[in-house]
Length: 177
Image (cartoon, rainbow, N blue to C red; front, side, top):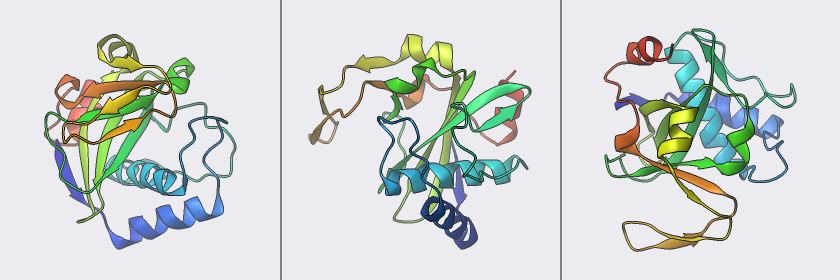
């Protein structure tokens, strides 16, 4: 996992973009504005680090992926948290997205208390679907801190330790082939 301090400019860019565009275009499991902001912020930071084009919005459905690396379609998934990412935490993948033509997923965690984006790792979509635990919509999930929630959509959960680890941004470029 690698941590990056998110800049005020990146935060402003993501907030402005979410304010001007509705990124919830699937119809179900779209996420509220705050969740959309966190997702666009993750995409913005990763794009900046990889010297790729930032998300623009307003172009309709993106096909289910955010960037291309080595001719592979990659979706960036970012969860908002208030604590640093830990090895035993899980990442979520909404089941409605399993049908999209995506080769890899990069998982990130945005710590809202200190504006640190952790790029947690990556995994091929086929490996994710094989290794993740699947929960039907409406399943009650209990977190390791004892709190619980009811899933609002079909949900895949993948543990951090099941992702390909990265020590630097170049590890993503080398691993996604």
